[in-house]
Length: 626
Image (cartoon, rainbow, N blue to C red; front, side):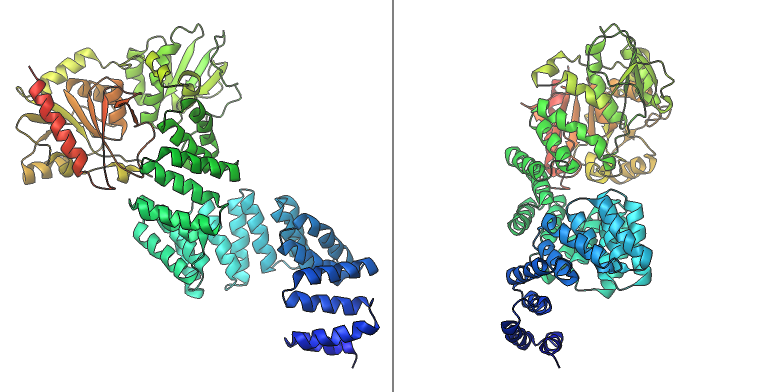
């Protein structure tokens, strides 16, 4: 038996020292034998001596440039140390020398994927799948490349196919979980990761992905438990530290959240998500300078990260750095999960200049946001061009009365067939007209006007002797943040009720059961004006608000409407999730709505202090009445 065969047998049984000793003896007599050098390189590689292995494979290639094994292994070693550009020529050579060796294609595809050459990587994986359609590694790695290209659905199909063939292939399960996260299919992600954990209960990755999906579906207690399970299995799992910190932030445990995010960054200092989430947590703690530094670091690490840009925008706007904030605010169009709706049009964007071409300004989110940005319209009134504003049709009667220099049209019906030459989303107006705090002084307040006759009639119907008439709105139906911003009617009014106050229902939706229960259980009456549909009749709601002396509201459309009408509004705000950037006081005042006063929670879910402060303001308002 030849020495090299003996060495191979020793290496194959794991006896690396014996194999190495045999090969070295052989090479003393045959120092330039490529096969002997190759086996020694394999042995060094198996023993973790990667630099020595690389040198040996390099020697072999100098002796024989067509040695498949040397190119194959050297490419792998270079890729494993992150030197993917250096590895590519060796992967190319391996493919050229043995074009039916599918692992050579997979290795090259993996290197190209690391270099962000995703389409080229997919071509390599497809070369494998042409020969072996069920090859799980190729399917999974192709899916990962598609995921990087944003092709979430096709990526999922690759992972699902890999699992059809190899149901216990762990990398495909993990990749599928990441794809479902990226596609925001959180409920499905919970289901699939639960399945995966039945097979792989010790997978920290699966527990982490489960935690991320649970957090997105508001199952925060279960999410925290999942992250802790992942960390028990793998204490250095930086993604789980980041996920745990983010979940703790959402339940108001800010100090522990910061500790977790710090831990994530101590393990992986270039982890942009941890900087983003630590920045968000610091915002809720009022640490705006530190939050800004975190977000700027995240952008330095990942300049194209939309989440970092959007979060930095909201931080800058909260801090009053409007010029920079509005620049980053434009990132909203790259984040579909934020809910901004882009108008499909070929007409150019307006840059703020006078023109002879009709201008279209269009709403991009809900009614509250449309009201917020239309506070700028008064400054456009003197522009010579025709000005068309596309809004939710429910707003049109109110706006047509308030801003007669503009033409208002139904946002749902707008298209390029409308006569306009330039266009701009309403949310981009501040970039042109609100570059600083001082620029807000140009706004007209109030900028909306309720129907005077209807207001007078309603005042006669809601007035109750000398009582202070308080309009109340307590709930938000917004899908992502509504639960965090809302309060029950009972919780709002029980600590506020007084025989000097008369409450009027401004809440949209069917509130009859809540009002009836409050009166039966607490003896507190809330008057409802049945003829006004607070959801659909916005003009009527505006008159009802105007007929009140004061408004108490959570963060919803009613608060925007009351602020735009110039009504004193006592605004209940959450801490943490659900606190929008525009509800920020500067020197005690809201720049968008000067008559809105904020009363914020001190702790997540605890309305005790803000309601106590509102009660004091109501008592003062009663005393101020003539």
